[in-house]
Amino acid sequence: MRRLSAAVLADLPEDVRRPSYDRGAIRTGVIHLGIGAFHRAHQAVLFEAALEAGDMRWGVCGVSLRSAAVRDQLEPQDGLYSLVERDAAGERVRIIGAVRNVLVAPENPEAVIAALASPDVHLVTLTITEKGYRLNGGSLDFSDPEIVHDLAEPAAPKSAVGFLVAGLARRRAGGLPPFTVLSCDNLPHNGRLLRDAVLDFAGRIDSALARWIAAEGAFPQTMVDRIVPAATDADVAALAIRIGCEDRAMVKTEPFFQWVIEDRFCSPRPDFAALGARLTTAIAPWEEAKLRLLNGAHSAIAYAGGLIGIEHVHEFVALEQGRRFVESLWDESVTTLSPPPGLDLDRYRAALMARFANPALRHRTAQIAMDGTQKLPQRIIAPLVSRLERGDASPMLTMVLAAWMRWVGERVAHGGETVLADPLAKRLAVIQMAQSAQARVDATLALDMMFPASLVPMLRPVLTTAYSELMDGRVRDMLFAADKR
Image (tube, rainbow, N blue to C red):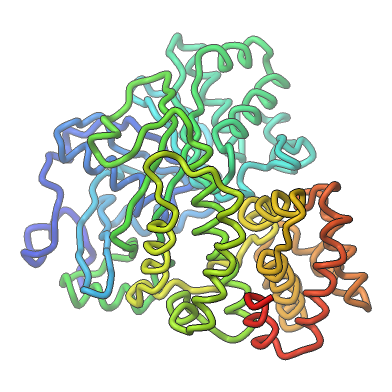
């Protein structure tokens, strides 16, 4: 079967939406670090809308910091891929043309730096997951092997921070202004954390460069929201039948789209507000609501569902007990929020539950469960800290942590540390060697990158109880009893 490419666009079914603009007229105004499925289903779609509106400055150069897989998927397709939006009513297919090319950083770091230094580039966006920032306790981890390498070899970096600094240094040396950097990862205060990491790294290389970035650059906070499950071979095969050609770079997603951006730029930008994003001067309330309600519930479903053999999110909330589990978790987390104007929390919760229940997405709990040590601090532990400091009992938040601990134990027991897909996999595996539940709880709470020291005395007894119950009793009964306490 033919691959999707520019040559076959005219042959696609009439109901498949195609780029209406001249792709040859696009300029590359965006460099995206970490060009996975989420970027292609989220930020790239907004840049596509800018191109459709006639602003040809916003083509995307994707950068893979690890593997050549996405480049190898897109290159034979002229950078084109299908965006498949699915819900209970059916699916809509749209061909996205905003991605002009993909660079593979390990193959040619100089090409990435040169792209960052292009006068046409005004924005750098990132979706590199929480662990990609190389942070420890909120600050750049100078013991991280990639950061150590990049300080020694700044002209051939490996890390996202190293590439940003190298690109900014090249722009400064060439008399160009800096680009605006937009972190699109689920980190609270993502722009500030990235700015601090970049300045810390730059300061180790060239203090004048660090001062220039601090004075002239911009790192707005952002919040992104769209559920993007990993596409499967079955998805690719079904789409091939639907459109008459094979698309190995397809992405599937839901109709919902949200991008909230702090209105602080140092460079030209698309008309974000007209294109569907929200500009604000206060990002934190939006960020906290999304992290603690959507992402927090996703983690809860991933670990609880994983323990009882539920493979997909929609299957979990199809259970009356599963929906009640999520609602009870939200009842706790919502008390820690200060919703911004324009966000009705009751309506937001109802909309989230409807999104979780979407049977067409088939969002796998195993996909969500990865990198728990990086995700849980902002999704579950942060609201738990707020409640415990007020003296509020938090059985659901505590039970999610206990479920994660048992999930880790079962994964290690059945496959060893390699199946955890977590940057702290080795330490988590060692913790499982402890003989008693209390010893495993104590060793887990000693993970200071996850648990603030002030939280440990308050959390130790309740987490020990919850974890012991999960270890001693029937898992389903223990999980679904928690919301009745």
